Image (cartoon, rainbow, N blue to C red; front, side, top):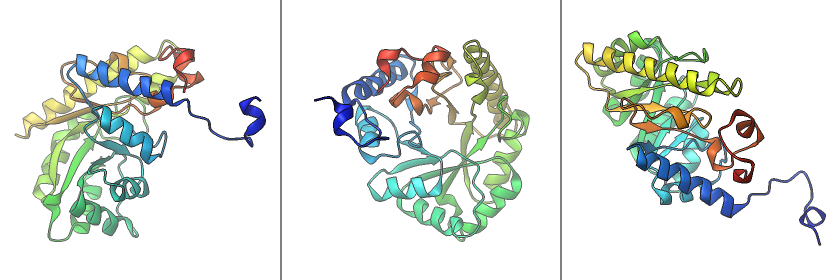
Length: 251
C-alpha cells in the first residue's frame, strides 16, 4: 500500500521529522555563531511550520508580502519583517499601519520616496514603524548602494520612522556550486560599508540582516546580527546541487 497510490497528485508531502531536524540544525548553527534567526515564511506559507521555527528559537519571521504578514499576525506572530521594499500604495499603506499598531513591524526601504510614502501612510504615528534599509550586494534585484544607507536612515528618522539597521539579499549565491562563498563575501563587504555609512550620520545599525539558505554557511562575519534563510526548512535538489544541503535533508 504505497503512499503514492493513496494520494492524488500533484501534492506536497512534508517529512515532518526531516523538517524538524532542519529547523533545529539551523537554530544550532545560529546559536554557535551568535546570530538571530528570522526565517523567511514565503518558502512554506504555513502557520504550523512557522510556529515550529519560533518554538525552536527564531526571534520572529520574515515575510515577502503584506498579505503574508497579515496572515501570520492574525495567528499570533508578533515580530514581523517585511523584507521587500514595498511601496505603500492602494490598500497597502493602511494595512501596514494596522500591522504596526498590533505587532512589532519592520519594513524594507531602499529610496527616499518610499520612506516618505511610508511616513505619510503612518499618519500621526510614524514611530510605530521600524525601517530596515535594503542594500544591493550584487544580486541587482533591489536595494540601494551601501554608501547610501546612512542618508536613507537619516531621511527615515527625519520623517519620524525608526531606522534600525540594514539588510541585503545575496541572490547571486545560487548561480552554481562555486557561487555561494563569493556571494557571501560580497554580502559581508556591502553590509560592512552600510554599517559604516550609518555611523557616518550618527545612527547605529542595531540589526544587520543577511540571507539566504545557499549562503548562510558563510554568513558568519562579526558584522552580521541576523540571518533570514527560508529554503532550509525543506531543502531541495537545487540546494543539494549547490552544496548547501544533503539529499537526506530534503523534507
